[in-house]
Amino acid sequence: MRACVETDVLSFTATKQLGEFSLDVAFEAAAGVTALFGPSGAGKTSIANMIAGLINPDRGRIVLDDEVLFDSSGVNVPPHRRRIGYVFQEGRLFPHMSVRANLLYGRRMHRLPHDDAAIRHIVDLLDISHLLERRPGRLSGGERQRVAFGRALLMQPRLLVLDEPLASLDRRRKLEILPYLVRLRDEAKVPMVYVSHQAGEIIRLASQVVRIEEGRVIANGGHELLDMRAEEMAY
Amino acid sequence: MLDLTPDEWTAILLSLRIAVVATLAALPFGIAVGYLLARGNFWGKTLVDGIVHLPLVMPPVVTGYLLLLAFGRRGPLGAFFADYLGIVFAFRWTGAALASGIMGFPLMVRAIRLSVEAIDQRLEGAAATLGANRAWVFATITLPLALPGIIAGMVLSFAKALGEFGATITFVSNIPGETQTISAAIYTLTQVPAGDAAAMRLAVVAIALSLMALIASEWLARAVNARVRGD
Image (tube, rainbow over all chains, first blue to last red; front, top):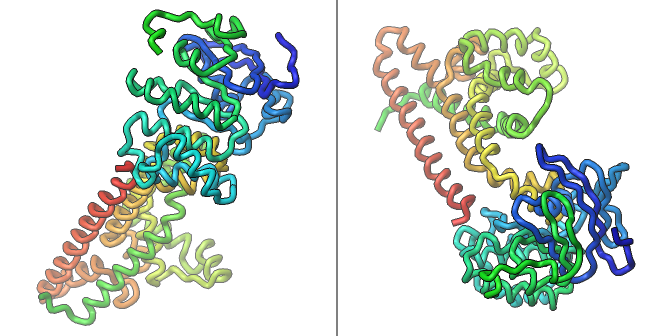
């Protein structure tokens, strides 16, 4: 395992037994976009949930920006104090609130001052200004994911975790959303952990790749770890 | 229209007051117990569930008798409420509200519990990652999403309170102007000669009130469901 150098944003070590499945993973993520790449069922979502604090490792240590978020010796910062933006595979927008209320939810909970410029910036970046008064039930899958990106970003997260954010979309929608993610990466300057089993998405977004299979890190490096199947090259 | 006598009006207004107070007073407890039964994982959960459902399966007269023992003037709880809070239940309309609130409680808890169980807990996780602590998650996600069930529970409890008879008459008797509800008044009228017409009038009122509660709840449920589903 590589030593934690100064540029690392996130240091993650965890073991967890989930029924028959055992997870034993350690990796560091630098600023920029780090991809967790591997087939479905490899344990990537469990890792994302542990980073966000939605589930706890049996043993391990999670450090973000020099703050210990979890340590099996007794530290466990609850999810609402971790300030980690999380974009879920299925959006998870609050169905009883308007898009606007969804977007502002994190800011309200963190008591951030109202900042019209910041809100307009994100709303324009994601092209969702025409959706603000709608309910999530009336959005398309792609629109819903864009709102979910905005909701996570507007609370000014220290880290953005994206768990297969494009997996629920068809191919055309994926191609439509990818440029927004590239824009987010380049303009929002928030470090990201990007979970995906699609090499095509990762090659567009991430510089660092952590390859995970059956609950273990099998390689940690760059794009050479991605095995591109012909159908994915089309991205 | 129905030509109601002052006594009949008294019984109707009293019934409404008892049902409204019973429902509103039971509501916070109903939400707490419904939530606990839906989400809690504690020792004795089955026992709590059983106790909550007792009024549904016990003869109402037994519930009324137990209330009389506990909340009568000399009962342990009755003495406490009278001495420290100044609330007397025995042979008062407040006692009728207590009895009908307890009789409707299982119905209220059941509706709330089911609606809490139906909530996608992943939404609560999402709220936590956005900075909401448990209290805020409950107030901004769980409670609004459970609202259809809460309204259904309130309507059921209200309807039960309007119609309650056995526990109420056992606990607080049948005193005109104090504890004589529509049901009790109809019962009294059927016991006297020439009470038929008045009994029929009150029966019509009871049916009308029940229908109105039903229609109001349908309308509310539709409005709230549309809100919660996000259409």
